[in-house]
Length: 165
Image (cartoon, rainbow, N blue to C red; front, side, top):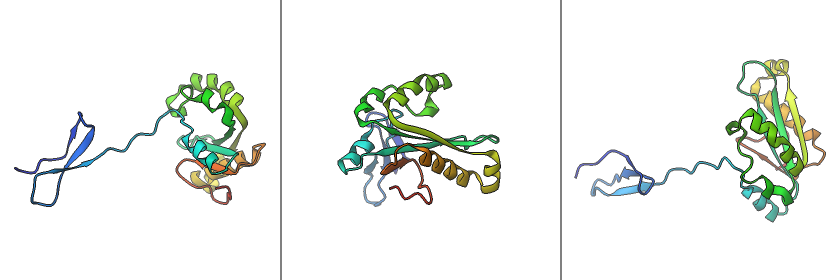
């Protein structure tokens, strides 16, 4: 039997790849990566709490894509006792309309022990580049929080010169 090209089998939702041993026409199964849920599950926070981290901050930036304007970072420390109020109600901000983000802000602030923002100006972006300006905005948000986190959740990278794990 001739080797077939890769194909998607919707019944078992996996990619079927021809086996490369040359002796058989059997297939290896390679499961697709699962997309992260657009809704928070708080599984990371629950795992960190089990490791005795109690003040866990999340931080993220907005404004890295536009050609003009500042880059802004927001940081939040959420109350563990209020996580369940957020599940299924908020999601990745890129998937929410501007109105939804504004409407959910009071709920987020109610569930938070601390929230803060930091920014880098267009001039700072021009002088140091967007990546370093983003790090500066994140540091400013962290330094402005009323509580000092003992663990920091950041997507995609580590913030230089920040000693929080």
